[in-house]
Length: 253
Image 1 (tube, one colour):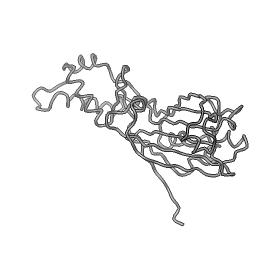
Image 2 (cartoon, helix red, strand yellow):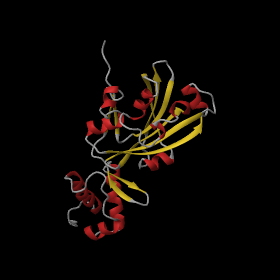
Image 3 (cartoon, helix red, strand yellow):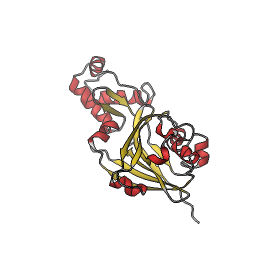
Image 4 (tube, helix red, strand yellow):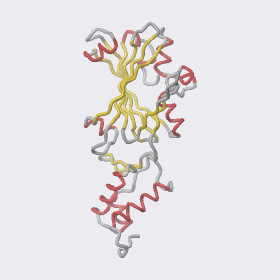
């Protein structure tokens, strides 16, 4: 398959063929590329050539490497995170709020891994939630995936006194998620405040999000307030900078 007389480097020819297979759907988002050994046999080139070809595809954002597991096809486009109605009661009632709403709008299959723990509030958490330092908080850590590939990490912290004996302390919070359960527990939501910044990921974040070197993340902190003005949740989200686009809509009046 390699044209030695073309003048085009072999690694670019390999990358071009793999790119075409990705673009035509022979390889789908989430699929694993054949092993390095199989690619060497398929194209009749050296391992160095295959590594250069895969490196080129990684630089183009088409594939990502997961240490010890292989090289995977990434989603073909950015995930547009829509601001309008993403946290509304109507969206939650239809089970289309937040990440699930993004999945429907962007036509990807969502999946979420959840871990529940409990910890004493540190100074930052206590200040954000208006509770005493050391007070027990419920921690919900999630890894959000689009077509099997991780695109977002989210860590919510809520005062334990308002989550005890609710589904918020379970992996599956039920239809409408944690916000619906908060309202059922007597904490109707009034508004949310989000702050957005960018930074380089920690090594752990880069590994979990399968980020290439030099890829930044969006750091989004959202605090949910009840109608009584109480902060009932602090959610720290880390979004892949090369996979996400934040879209906001504001009224003119």
